[in-house]
Length: 135
Image (cartoon, rainbow, N blue to C red; front, top):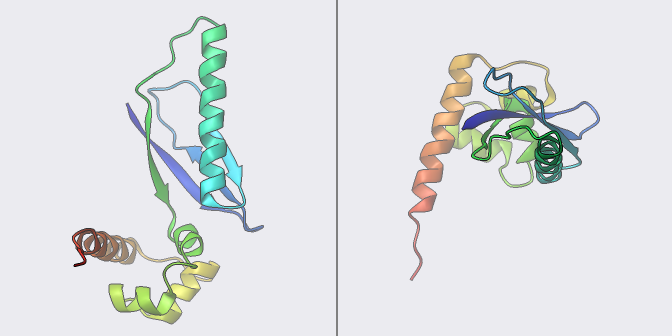
């Protein structure tokens, strides 16, 4: 079973990972950390604790539980700012660097169309990069 897990960056700069509402499960999971990786690690620890609790209570836990991690745009930009510059992302997506900066700081919110444009450009770039081979 695949369930969406949302990654958000708080005003204090820490990250939270939590389950998107899903009626197929009857529990919540949450992880926090200074980085996305730390928050995911804490999130998985939360899952393991819930699994142990279900076992103690003799309840069935969905063993095939998998997560699709989804970011809001500002959190993605913050999490990857040390790997992808706003200028580079602007060239890649066609979205103005200053506008991306506004999305990063929360001054403005991107339209759904712009979010989809950025996501599509990143996926295409990822596909292109995945085919790189060196001699």
